[in-house]
Length: 372
Image (tube, rainbow, N blue to C red; front, side, top):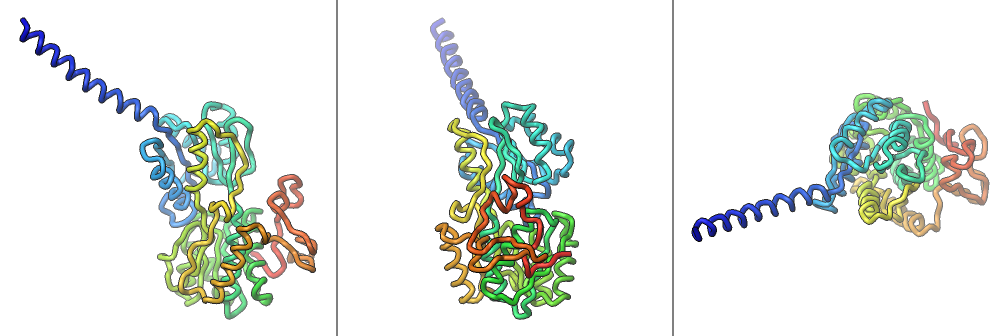
């Protein structure tokens, strides 16, 4: 009998040990915060969505087992498609949804009203609430201006090409900053813009760059998803400036640098606040000083003189001494002749985006830039 009791006691202890292990694993999984990401393109697009996905990976790497991430790729900017993607992520346990494209804004706003226990972060939009829906973007005009300096000091033809997706305020701001940067070191430059009317179309983006090269442009910049323009520039023995992420490997013979996003820095900060219980919706606008927007490392294709000039101006931007949208003793004009920046003044975020006054938003190209 004593032997039987002893065996039973051993079995109880062993089973208790297994139960303890199972409970710890379940608790660990329960404690992990699940964050779901919605991408407009494939996560390996070499540009916009891949830059966002790099941020997602940085988030996981930072928090390890404390954070679990999920993603849905190539979601159309259509209301039901966005809602389906978000609900699918929530069904898998996501309590934070990160929607990474402008066209996701309205359906995400509707979901935020319906799912009040879920937190929503939306990239590039202007809508939010004071409970569970915030937006985030960055002062990409800062590294755009610096990349313009490089282009202006690199060109031999004084013709710069720019492949852009749409003539939206976001893109106009970037084109104008790039143009002003180039003009600051080379007043004779002109910027020719072609709009593809598409965020992600490798063939079309490359074809637009080829058209600009045929017009004599010898440096190609871009606000579109893929490295197509850079590849076209390399084929034509011209130079290129990328976007979204460091894409130096795509066309090393042409690549100069790129204005890039550091989404991981933002995600880590926001998720830490959520975990601490201190998060509140905001309209975040990261800067070069924050590290959210950056200029990718300049390659050997950039002259020593251009590198030195960029470093000089970058220091002034990061210290707050210099605003890229500022005018000296003369008005800065739009290409239709109207005043963009009155002499002796500068434009802040509110003005260029038309936050307080929609009529002030940048919708026209600066003098020296033309689009088609």
